[in-house]
Image (cartoon, rainbow, N blue to C red):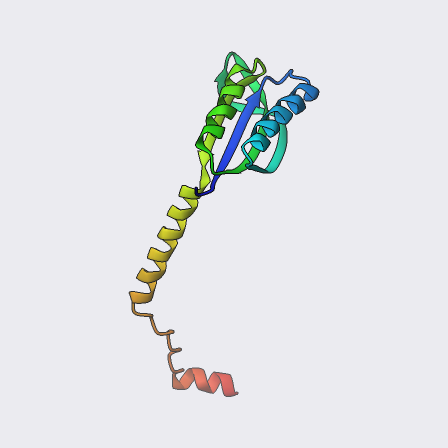
Length: 138
């Protein structure tokens, strides 16, 4: 089965103690380990302003995870655990490998188009007129 790359971002209530956030991350890490997947990156971004109110809150504690897995059910399990957590107010999962493939395809297409276009010759400097040459020489 093919491995897939995912971004998982979740937002906790701003008043959540960091120990509770660490415990939630450890729970997610345990679920990842059970499925022989790999959690490549964990970043705690801290309390930041939300783009819009979520459950009447203006701020949230952001956590970012980069995950590599061949099991689709792992993602469903992680989302279930985030959904039942009282401290989590919002989460988002993005499958990156499809986006990376799409970007590579677009880059190759741009390169092919650029290769087909005729290259413009560098502009040649105009020859100086007689009065300009005289001024330059003397």
